[in-house]
Amino acid sequence: FAARQHAMLPRLAGGATRRLTHGNRVGMSSFSDPFRSTRAAASQPSDAVGANIEVADANQRRDLAVVLVNPQIPGNTGTIARTCAATRVPLHLVAPLGFSLEDSQLKRAGLDYWNSVCVKVHDDWASFEAYYKGLGSPGRLVAFSKFGARPHAEEGAYLAGDWLLFGAETTGLPDAAHDACAASGGIRRIPIDEAHVRSLNLAVSAAVGTYEALRQIDGPPTLANPPRDDAPGTYTM
Image 1 (cartoon, rainbow, N blue to C red):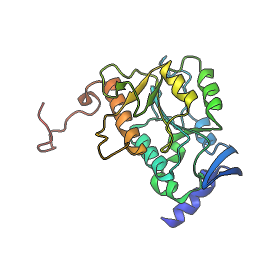
Image 2 (image 1 turned 180 degrees about the horizontal axis):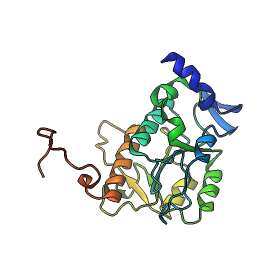
Image 3 (image 1 turned 120 degrees about the vertical axis):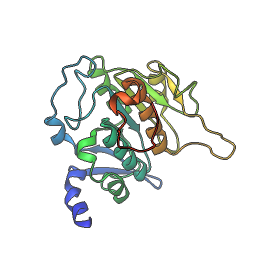
């Protein structure tokens, strides 16, 4: 495993990076894209929903994407990458990040998935917004926040083409991102009992939001994942 980590390092790093230190955090402001080579080979879809959507791997969906804006904890980002790999949903990162892409915790959590999951690392919110708008009609921006006005599992909350945005673990989404989502697909809230817990872990929130969006976009789960006759006692139709 250690040898495989070492072999993956050049692909994860992608080239020289310039880091800016903010207190105890490390942000990345200008760096090369470590996932460019895998994106170049991706084919364009024939359906209208994802006609201009860039993916990291030809097997990825083009009707949903996850965007992490200023994530701070490498283990969370790696775990979200694993969820995206399992669901075939493209992942975007918006800097500044609270870690280096070479971080050992990040690689341990999502080591085998980066080249086929992460589409692009954007320099900042303005860069992502310009990229998003440049796609033409890429779909809506849907944010997740504990201050959201509508429940995350409300029927009709998600449409094909949506981009699901999650903010930093410590500060949430920046105001510009929050406002852009409010004017587009809205702000969704995953309910929690706040008597003892202030918020959900970012990786948990991303998984809950992603799977609920897929449920609504794909329809009943048995359509995409039919029950098996040889699976004893799972559920009854």
